Length: 216
Length: 95
Image 1 (cartoon, each protein chain N blue to C red):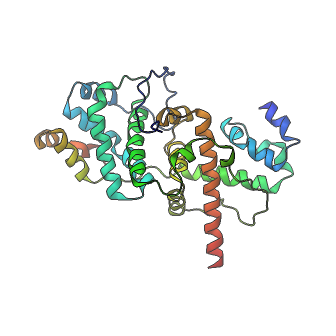
Image 2: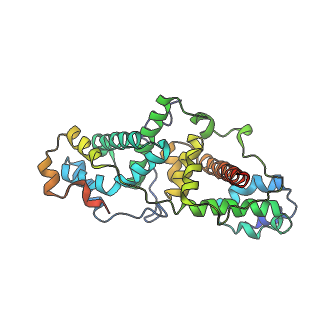
Image 3: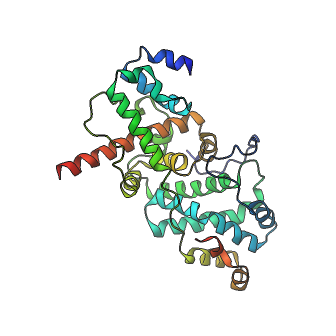
């Protein structure tokens, strides 16, 4: 299945201004830089790189957990941007469009590596057997106030790639489900479902870590 | 959300947890659900999931890529070093 690799060239319905992202407001000077970069202005492309390198790199690093690979894929994503920026039509926010491009680069890389743990098809396709495990039994630990940044980052690294991707895009990067659905070429319902599964899995991972610490 | 609230009065834990994704995405006050008044386990679950989501929002920003990344990009697209230096290069956005 190639749906997560190929860029969707179909039309995207326009959305009201300001509806693009919760935490991704328009960047001053971005529109002008896009316009000039589309015309081949290398300096404007530099400006776009400076504006977006951190978020693209962060996405790559969280998905791969390896600095060298994350830098390679950041480079590849921006080279693709350079080649494809002429096709950006402004139907969606530029950062969403760029993230989609970066996501595809990451997914292609993960696929080449053989995808650890679970295939993307399994994690991004809804399945009746794939729902979050019910939490019926009592727990004697609570997470609130007990998780530091490093612990959470480590738990995120241990999520299956499909879960990790949706969790990072939504809960960390602040993208809305409609934007994630657009990036991953999946339904909004699928994005919501994967996010919930990711949070449930993270909870399991974090509780497991707590129990191990208590035993130690 | 009235429907979900009304439904929750007779929900089992399994039914409540099945409905949780939609409850969270509806931006309703999940903690006001009737089921949680009598279920410590689901209350703890909701508290944990909300905590995870809130902590995740604190993870940005991370680090920048090394300057070598831009250097490789610059070479690949054939831009001269002078152009990058003249305009501050990609480092302009660094903290």
